[in-house]
Image 1: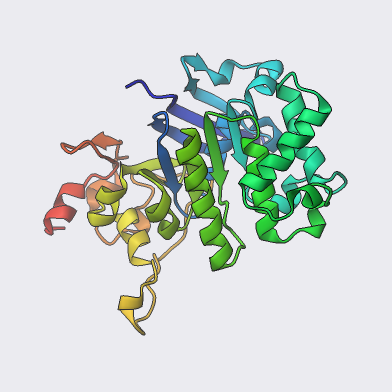
Image 2: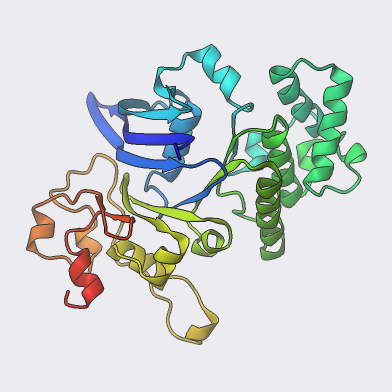
Length: 328
């Protein structure tokens, strides 16, 4: 089956003091219709930057794509002009941003903000748009949607604002929803409700979902397939079960060991030593070498490439076979 979205050797960067600083360094992955894909990694690894590239929002951050392509239904989105993006965003591809308080306009009621999205993409009357906005608020589980539609963002709780963002993103029935840390800063109960909501809406509509998060617990609950990013590169790609049962890359192993568990009791929590390389930092060899317990001399000389294994997963590590065999 042909993927609905394909990202191929995507390089993104910015200019600083006359030098080009790369943030994304050859990111490659694809997404099938109806599939849920998780993108995980520490802050600064390039997760959100990848989503901004797909949405055509790089210029807002002073960034630009220098190589590669983003294919959406056989069209390279990097060739889009402003009017192409206006037609695409919100209609075919929508995004739930990380912080709903800053993503929502504080001067406009939430009902009107959803209505504006509908009117921008569909030939309907203002009354029809208003009624659909209320219906979307009802679908995402907001009580008394007729009343809440007249509320301003500051009058709603964090969980309700996040539901408004989801309603706005889905009001034009997109084929792809990108959710960037949709449960950050929400308490555990509300987080579970938002994740259940995303799963239910995906099943009802058949849309594809890209979930960007640093929380592997969220990934295990929602995603069918996972890519792990580090220092602007994809270092591992696998199905959810493959990733959690037998991670191949040392960084993925470290992330999984860092997850809290009731089984660990009072044991000290594990954390990956060292720091993520900063954009523009010159590194010879593997970017993870200084933090990796399995690093060898070859890791300090050679940059590993993303390689497909026999079981269909992908990994960027020179020593992954030794590590999995326990001889590292």
